[in-house]
Image (cartoon, rainbow, N blue to C red; front, side, top):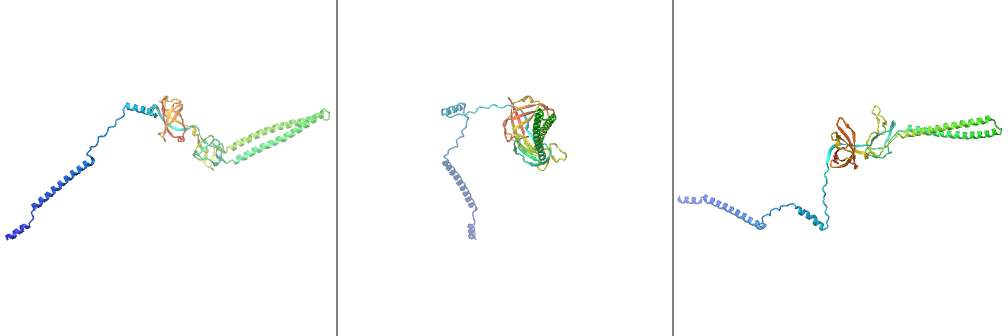
Length: 348
């Protein structure tokens, strides 16, 4: 039994030896890690040369003496030096707001009541003075003109007949006078010939007066005929088209709302200016010819040179303002009627 017990004891595992082996292996791993870190640090020192980063250089502004020396050096090398001169500050003494207005704007209409047969304009079209904008039905006016011209021709033909008869009557009177002087004709024949001449002269004067009347009638009918063609009164741009072919137009308003009173609206873009309302408490700061800086609400960064044209000599009691007209010095296509604008009156 004793031998069997010894054999069994030899087969048992000694736990203390296993724990000791594990501890030795852990310590070895730690030592290996420390050695690796040391070797890596030494390699980094060898790779980067062991130098430390240089401190950042402080940038300082050049001194006044150095600044003066630069142009002198450039002058020695014949290099031109451009120096910026300080600009004087513009003093704004008053601000106001207003609108772009046109001094010449017209809603073009006809001078007679008529049916529109043709409209030759559209919005945005540029027109010239005398250009045809629209035409009305002119058939009756054309007939009246032809009738007046025919009457003038008939009167002129009547004058020709009277003139021929007068020439013959004067020859008869001359013969009768000569025969009467030789006692071959009576005094009565001379008197009848003289009366015929006087009557024809009176008819000639009447016919000449009728010609004057006939010519005036022709001019009147020709002028009335021209009313049926609507033309532009001045150069400008069409901003509104008010009528279409087939509508009735009248120079005055008519009941029912079916009659047009205008063909189109024309604006003379060369007559644009600025109108602003200035508080009456500050109107003393504004004077004619004063320089103004204007900025459109549509282009706030665009400075427009302008000047005061006139101060309207009346005040608005309701708003306590005075209206001021301002001239736009430089015309531009971006400036349009009724645009909002802000102005600054500059110190003289």
